[in-house]
Amino acid sequence: MRAEYDAEVARLPNSGSRFHEWNWGGLLFASRGITYDETDQLGLPPDRQSARWKARMRNTDLLCGGDADIGEVRPLGDHYYLTSFGC
Image (cartoon, rainbow, N blue to C red; front, side, top):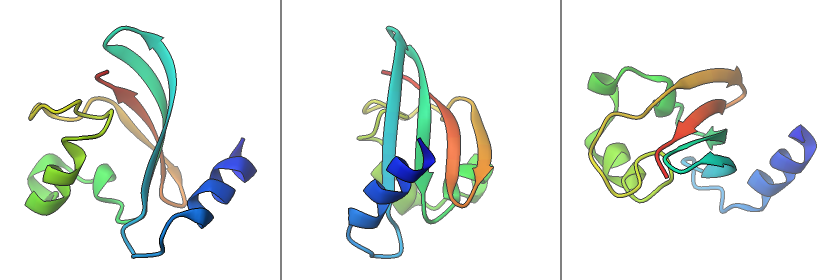
């Protein structure tokens, strides 16, 4: 799937802060998938993530409009992360 994910990322506007989620699904409020975060703030501890980045994440599957901490995050390299989604 990596080649498909790379192709999708390449189609995003190259702003230096490209972000995309691939939610593989699962149970309600317990799904997993891959997240691409060009800023790599996803891999930082919450106290080191910028307020602007956190605000941007509120409307993603990572936080589903809430302010809770992001769930499980495992770096996969090259800005990709295995993540848990709240919705």
